[in-house]
Image (cartoon, rainbow, N blue to C red; front, side, top):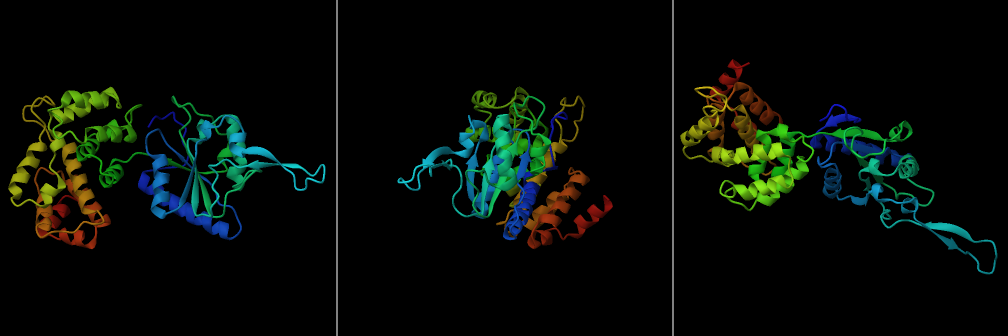
Length: 383
């Protein structure tokens, strides 16, 4: 993330940000029940992180209503307030006419809980931003108001850099609670796995997480690219098409890295299923040993070094498999998991990190799988 970008609030990955939203929404609903107004939330972050999707998925998961609004599309205040029309209560009386407003069709009408999403709020014109201040303060404008139990969430790109945004003054900023969304490869991989993203793409991001920081390379553009190559069974055989598709959505550096990933056969890293279900673990162990070695000449060494990034990817994929909600250990899973963690080429910091993460987030069945005297001795010795 560029240092000159102006962001607000704690920097959280999507999982922690979702937890923070749950707390804020619960507090806001409690305040509304007491006749008070809650406080809107603004989620900051660079482009392509999935800020909008996070809010949409939260509403869907909790079965809340969702009303979407893009203030940057507003040309005039009427787009926000609605269109005026004349009301004549009694046609026999002259002078009792008055003007009322028909709210825009995106304004929610049903009772909540629900979320009004003001997407890319600071891409709106300054005049529109000023018009939104009353809505953020009172959950209403002079022409309409939000129904009970509705929340307001805005998303925004940071000021600075190349973003075409309208600065928000202090009066507006203080009407909002601020959170910043950042990219975390493990959290993203967990989401991507559940969303059916190509496993080769997930392995690539876990192996090279530093590439998710370009102007065109974002989690969003990567998923778009992975969708395009999902039905190509052998990426190496179709490398020219893969290159064309990659260049259509990613930065040149990312494209070069991905093509190297494919040519190095890393899209065929040892999977979690192969490790856990192995009938002959020695074969799996040999593959992992081979993958852990840097090719001769890659780092200009005669014997080659150790590719910790590849081993870290395998560990992360194993962690994601073992911590899935529907994961059920099979008869040989425990033995194979321990054998993997005892592999000599696995650095002790990765071994300890995987063990710690599984003990913290794994089910009781998974924790039981880790009860092994040899493993305990190795972990204690590495402290």
